[in-house]
Image 1: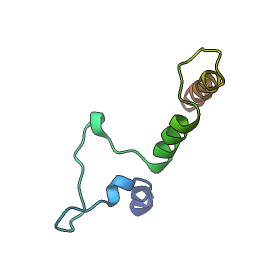
Image 2: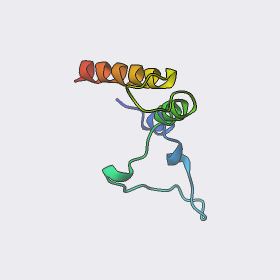
Image 3: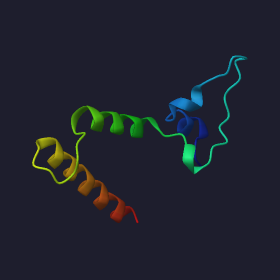
Image 4: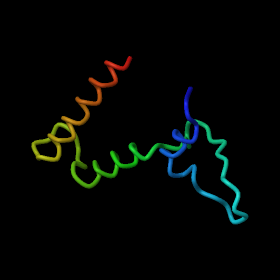
Length: 79
Protein backbone atom coordinates (compact mmCIF):
# COMPACT_ATOMS: atom_id res chain seq x y z
CA UNK A 1 0.00 0.00 0.00
CA UNK A 2 1.22 3.52 -0.79
CA UNK A 3 2.19 5.68 2.18
CA UNK A 4 0.40 8.94 1.39
CA UNK A 5 2.49 11.06 3.79
CA UNK A 6 5.69 9.79 2.15
CA UNK A 7 4.39 10.68 -1.31
CA UNK A 8 3.18 14.11 -0.17
CA UNK A 9 6.59 14.89 1.36
CA UNK A 10 8.07 14.87 -2.16
CA UNK A 11 5.84 17.78 -3.23
CA UNK A 12 7.00 21.02 -1.54
CA UNK A 13 3.83 22.92 -2.42
CA UNK A 14 1.72 20.41 -0.50
CA UNK A 15 3.26 21.56 2.78
CA UNK A 16 2.05 25.16 2.42
CA UNK A 17 -0.53 26.55 4.82
CA UNK A 18 -2.83 29.53 4.47
CA UNK A 19 -3.16 32.58 6.74
CA UNK A 20 -5.46 30.58 9.06
CA UNK A 21 -2.89 27.78 9.38
CA UNK A 22 -4.97 25.40 7.27
CA UNK A 23 -3.26 23.09 4.84
CA UNK A 24 -3.83 24.28 1.29
CA UNK A 25 -5.81 21.93 -0.95
CA UNK A 26 -5.11 22.05 -4.67
CA UNK A 27 -7.93 21.29 -7.09
CA UNK A 28 -5.78 21.99 -10.14
CA UNK A 29 -6.21 20.39 -13.49
CA UNK A 30 -3.45 19.33 -15.87
CA UNK A 31 -2.48 22.95 -16.54
CA UNK A 32 -1.48 23.57 -12.94
CA UNK A 33 -0.41 20.26 -11.49
CA UNK A 34 2.00 20.34 -8.56
CA UNK A 35 5.40 18.75 -9.20
CA UNK A 36 7.72 16.75 -6.96
CA UNK A 37 11.03 18.11 -5.71
CA UNK A 38 13.01 15.84 -8.05
CA UNK A 39 11.41 17.61 -11.04
CA UNK A 40 12.07 21.05 -9.56
CA UNK A 41 15.72 20.08 -8.97
CA UNK A 42 16.14 18.66 -12.49
CA UNK A 43 14.69 21.77 -14.14
CA UNK A 44 16.76 24.07 -11.92
CA UNK A 45 19.90 22.10 -12.73
CA UNK A 46 19.15 22.31 -16.46
CA UNK A 47 18.71 26.09 -16.31
CA UNK A 48 21.93 26.47 -14.32
CA UNK A 49 24.12 24.24 -16.48
CA UNK A 50 22.75 23.36 -19.90
CA UNK A 51 20.13 25.89 -20.95
CA UNK A 52 20.47 26.32 -24.71
CA UNK A 53 18.95 25.64 -28.10
CA UNK A 54 19.15 22.11 -29.43
CA UNK A 55 21.37 20.83 -32.25
CA UNK A 56 23.93 23.62 -31.95
CA UNK A 57 27.71 23.43 -31.81
CA UNK A 58 27.94 24.88 -28.32
CA UNK A 59 28.83 22.64 -25.40
CA UNK A 60 25.52 23.51 -23.75
CA UNK A 61 23.61 22.64 -26.94
CA UNK A 62 25.28 19.25 -27.06
CA UNK A 63 24.46 18.70 -23.39
CA UNK A 64 20.82 19.62 -24.05
CA UNK A 65 20.70 17.14 -26.94
CA UNK A 66 22.19 14.46 -24.70
CA UNK A 67 19.67 15.13 -21.93
CA UNK A 68 16.76 15.00 -24.38
CA UNK A 69 18.01 11.77 -26.00
CA UNK A 70 18.42 10.16 -22.60
CA UNK A 71 14.92 11.17 -21.52
CA UNK A 72 13.41 9.86 -24.76
CA UNK A 73 15.07 6.49 -24.14
CA UNK A 74 13.79 6.39 -20.56
CA UNK A 75 10.24 7.27 -21.61
CA UNK A 76 10.35 4.61 -24.35
CA UNK A 77 11.47 2.00 -21.82
CA UNK A 78 8.75 3.09 -19.41
CA UNK A 79 6.07 2.81 -22.06
